[in-house]
Image 1 (spheres, rainbow, N blue to C red):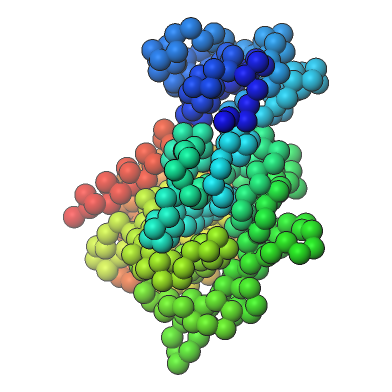
Image 2 (cartoon, helix red, strand yellow):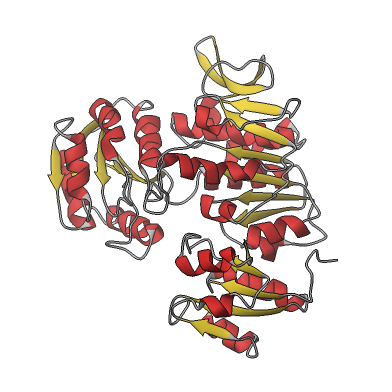
Amino acid sequence: MSLIASDHFRIVVGLGKSGMSLVRFLAQRGVSFAVADTRENPPEMATLRRDYPHVEVRCGELDVEFLCRADELYVSPGLALATPALQAAAARGVKLSGDIELFARNAKAPIVAISGSNAKSTVTTLVGEMAAAAGKRVAVGGNLGTPALDLLSDDIELYVMELSSFQLETTDQLGAEVATVLNVSEDHMDRYSGLPAYHLAKHRIFRGARQVVVNRQDALTRPLMSEGLPCWTFGLGVPDFKAFGLREENGEKYLAFEFQNLMPVRELKVRGAHNQANALAALALGHAVGLPFDAMLSSLRSFTGLEHRCQWVRELDGVSYYNDSKATNVGAALAAIEGLGADMDGKLVLIAGGDGKGADFSGLRDSVARYCRAVVLIGRDAGLIADALGDAVPQVRVGSLDEAIARSRSLAHSGDAVLLSPACASFDMFKNYEERGHLFARAVEALT
């Protein structure tokens, strides 16, 4: 039985991937609804016209009077809630909601909810693989892969959800079995008034949670909790009670839980301290929902990482090439620079730049000075990064990704690594970060 009143009128605002999942969900339940989109030709328009020809659609500037016909607006994560038409509708009593709120109302199985500025896709995928290895009927999605509402099924035993701050803004009560914010660093500052507003949006994930997982190395991940709410922690230090971390024994480093070594770090196929932290976060989340250690550790041993996330592409002339195109903010680039840099004998040649989304790049300077041989800059905000880095390392500015790869190759020494970790979005030069990563990998593979 769906937890949605069918006698009320709804409007789906935004006809992208999540908007189309809302259309399917509402249509299947006989709910009366319409669709609005600020774009003249939204991405899913052809699908809507084919499958639901009778649904009313309004494209272009949002009409407040039209929006106010609805009891509830399901707003796409791509559209800021600060949009004047949405604010005007809300002021007149229309509820602003989203697909995750609807998913939470209708999901019958426990939810593992994962957010954070960085690494959420990796940790979400890992927990999903751990649950599958433990024999659970698991559904994985949300901000990653399949939209949340398309995952709903009475057969599912566990949902593992990656959630963005934009999705959480329209979620009142998620009620997750376990929730985490993996880390918090500046991102989407073109949409938020500052870090506090972004932090607040992320922390909506903890509403109604029965357990929480906290990063010991990032105070901004710790929610204001009621007494007695079970809390598990992860971090790269030595763990104590209810904690996951690293222990050293006879010169060997281990992933550990409390006072017990679980597996040697060298058995992980993914490299870098940031990936060790991701593994520990996944273990904490899996343990919170009762997944057995043997299944979780076997998943960790076979995990090779996600495409575009510190993904090893090839080695040539003693130099390794890594595609970290998914690093669309400063925090993600820092995680890659520090994680790889601390895990190798040589230096990094960093390729960075693109659309900075209003970010402050000064946080890169110390790590670049420590781990990088040089920085090759591309894209619209190359100048801003150059200014922020100052004289930390030699800099080269180029006009294209191909030129950046060629210059990086000439700058790197044997034992070094060339790392594409842009700290920026891709939209000034590419369709998305995937296209940027694919073009990088293809060009690197073509080097002779």
